[in-house]
Amino acid sequence: MRRPTARMLRAAGLVALGAALAGVALSGCAASTSKPHRTASPTTERPTPTPTPTPTSNPIAGMTLQQKVGQLFMVGTQATEADATTVDAVKSLDAGNVFLAGRSHGGVAATKALVSQFTSLVASGSTAGLPLFVATDQEGGEVQVLNRPGFDDMPSALQQGAMEPSQLKDAALTWGSQLKSAGVTMNLAPVVDLIPSPDAAADNPPIGGFDRQFGYDPATITSHADAFRAGMDTAGVVPVIKHFPGLGAVTENTDTDSGVTDTTTTATSPSIGVFGTEIQHGARVVMMSTAIYTQLDPGGPAVFSSSIINGLLRQKLGFDGVVMSDDLSAAEQTAAWSPADRAVLAVQAGVDIVLISADPSVAAPMVSAVVAKAQADPAFAKIVDDAARRVVELKRQQLG
Image (cartoon, rainbow, N blue to C red):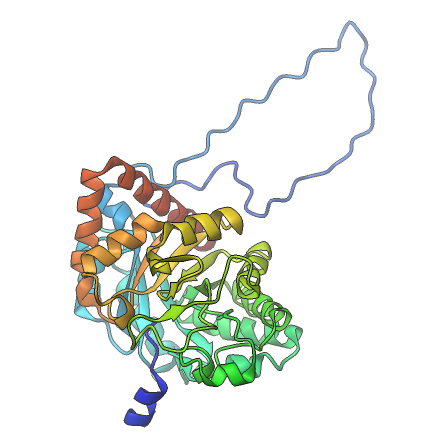
């Protein structure tokens, strides 16, 4: 997400749902009933018939390529008004998800009215009738897009980290319920990046510079991230953990600086372990960092790295949910690549949702590039199908 830097603050003064998925157990629980034993006579005993498996519906069956690609994008609009470019992205590009950006003090009612302008665009001809994920950044402290009336003033993550996890869970339920009442169904939070100490936080502009960390040890981060996620989940809002593989060891901000690099994080670092724990505890969406990690893949930003997304995140950590990017529309870290290349590289590496939060004008070339690549490359087209399937399955689970 595009974040204000401390320097900026000083200068300024501060995704047609098909039929319900048959035969899939979302909670993974199985019945364990026990029946009294009955002895059948040899003359009447019959073999138990083998049940006929119920076919599992294909969640993306019947969707056009354009509609499938559209599910892979989340396009930003100002939280105060419906950006015409974002409206057009939903109507004409089949963009399946919207992000509320900036800052709004219009409250719940105004936000709900804004969201309805986008959700009313859902139609079989534009988004295959699939509901939109409407997301925002509601972390707390200096990173809270939606404000009063009707939205509580949320403490910073560092302050949340001083709360008892049970207390934080209750608070997050309240905050999540406020989001849900305004039509917001996804929160790009919590931050689970591990900064090793308060002293290190002072040299960490993207996270420590805004008190976005729950604390300085894995146990504190995971216990409070679990609580925050549980509250949001109970409220009906999908939480997103970020920014894999972690921004806790960088000394520059990927939104405003280029060449941001982490030279220390390895596959066995405690910061990776935090994400692993969150995945084991049921995290369903992970946001990728745009920093470069020399010990993991020095070839470019993590968001463009298949070895980090498919190798480390999916294979090693076992994550099978939705992967989304940090902002790829205006971040200085990825400015050297064209918008079209950013989108293709991210999807090719394993990203399921490309976030275009700050500058919706790049949505058209990004979507067009992914469609064109899928038309020309069957292997890439399969990647698109797999990504769209993950997004639509999450919508089935969450939005019904």
